[in-house]
Image (cartoon, rainbow, N blue to C red):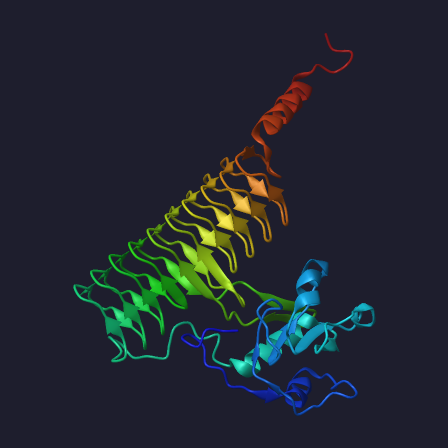
Length: 346
């Protein structure tokens, strides 16, 4: 469920209202007046929540979910055995249906940081020794810890909490985020913006509400013009002591461990798991749902494919990422084939 510091829930709605919104029918024998209080992930839902189920990878979470209502594909509905007390509703497109329901509960979810006026909102809590640069905008219920410095033209959205002894340099925008102590954020960083999530069809692309947060732990450094998207339902997490160079993109729901090093122009897609002390060299790319074990190191321009899992403590190179010795042997073999003389030539 969404954090009320950042999102206003317009529910509850009845099951009948929800079904009417998505063009579905209340299943036979089910009370259409039962209240739905919120949307949530399968693992985070309770009996008053609506969730969704897509794909076999979510099967274990679906089997154990406590959600009261779950949206599923019409095609897969006959094969599903729902947990006790869970109502399943078949829809043509789970992503489109969930996006529509999420917007019922959170119609303002696509707003970036507001609403608030220029300057410092009266409900903001500013610690001792905080320094604010010219043109700073601080929204409602923001908390800024002691001795933190906020540079000129920084925008801090509603509910954001920033710890002690941090440094937020100019022209940075932060929303939907909790930031720890001793964090350094360089100019132009964009933290907590909506993740890149759409439900696509022949009619176009529908934005899926991004109702999660960004969690940045203590002593993280974030370079200039880095973008870190907030989660869709859960959180995007940057672990303690991690160092991120300039021009890095981190997608929604990705978890990065402690003391990782991420070099300039790295791109990390959504829902990735990056272990402690991982090193990603310049322009490495990590596709969605990939897992990189603790202590692994990826060379420059290395590419990790969707869902690929890399073992901890090893060095990798190439596209797709392979153990570096294997990658170098393949390069040498290809080079030898190229140089090999053609038959009939002296």
